Length: 334
Figure (cartoon, rainbow, N blue to C red):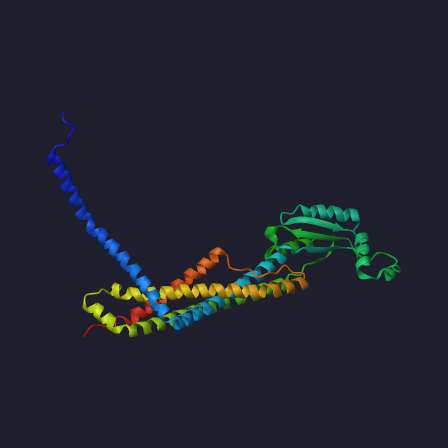
C-alpha cells in the first residue's frame, strides 16, 4: 500500500481549512478592531490631556483634595473608634463590700461571681492591702497612723467577658452585682465612653454626608471639563457623525478622558493622604505619649488605596458619561 494520501483528499481538506479560516476571520478582525480602537482612543486621550498640563493638573488637584478630605476624616474616626474600643475592652467593675463583710465571706463572694457567664476574672483586694496601697500612693502615711481602725472595705475588681464589654452587657452585670446583699456600692463609669461613641457616630454620619457632597462636586467638575472638551471638538464630532460614526464611537474618547481624570485625581488624593499622615504622625505620637494613650493615626491599607483609586475612576467615568449624555446628543449634522 502507498503511504501517500490521495491528492483529491488533500485538496478537499485544504479547501475546507481555507473556508473555515474565511468564516472565522471577520469575527476575529472585528474583535481586534474593537480593542485596537479602544487602545488608540485611550492613548489619544492621554496625549490630549498632556498637551494642556496646567489645566489637567488643576483638575487632578481639585479631585484629589475633594477625595482626600472625607477619606482622611474617615481614617481619623476609625482611629478614634479603635481607641474607644480598647478603653471599653479594658473596663472593669469595682465592687465595694459592706464593712462587716469578713475576708472569708469576700473570698466566697469572689468565687460565686467568677462563675457567671459574663465574668472573665474577679480579683479580691482585702482592706489591709488597700490601706497599704493608699498609704504608699497618697503620701498621708503619718496621718493614717492616727486612725483607730481601717476605714477601707474589701473590694472586688470584676473583669467582664469580651462579649459583655458593651453598654448593655455592662448595665446587666452592674444590676446583678448591686442586688447582692454583701455589696455596698458598684462603680463603673461608662458615661464618658457613651458620650464619645455618640459623638463619633454623629461625626461619622457628617463625614459620609460630606463625602456624598464632595463626590457630587467631583462629578460636576469632570462634567464641566468634558463639556468644554466636547465644545472644542464640535467639528470633529459632526464629521464623525456624517460619515456614519455611532454614538458609542463618538462617546468613547470623552469617557476615556473622564477615566484618566479620575485616575489622576485618585493618585493625587492618595499622595495627599500619605503626606498628611507623615506630617501629623510625630506630633500625634508625642501628644498621645503625654496622656499615656496608645492612640495613633491609621493610614490606608492596600485594599483601601485600591478602593480609593477605583472610586475616583468611577466618579470620573460617571461625570464624563453624564456630560456626554447631555451635550453630545445635541450635536447633530444639519
